[in-house]
Image (cartoon, rainbow, N blue to C red; front, side, top):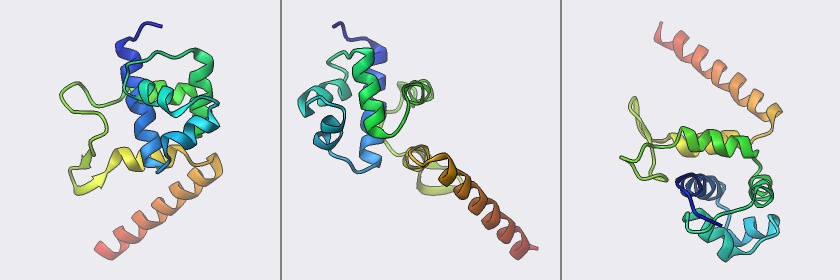
Length: 130
């Protein structure tokens, strides 16, 4: 299968999600019914993948294929290496990619809880500033 730029980028996204979850190549490969060396080559963009294989990898990561594509499209432009922490300018040291990956791996119910908690924290913060 021919390797494309899209395959390289989606491989980087797969690696970022896997690493954010602190999962090994072997764990995700086993869950995706492939082997770690194939998954490694996909992550590095040197091996293509079938739609079925991508679906199994996404499922093993707890995301959808469309989520992989969305992240690929919003990934760091070629000026920055994918996988590098993206710091929040107001809060240096905050790895937004890692936070986003963790949030995306939550169930919808848990995402709702996170959003409610953040709203509560922001409300408390405004009250203390006043």
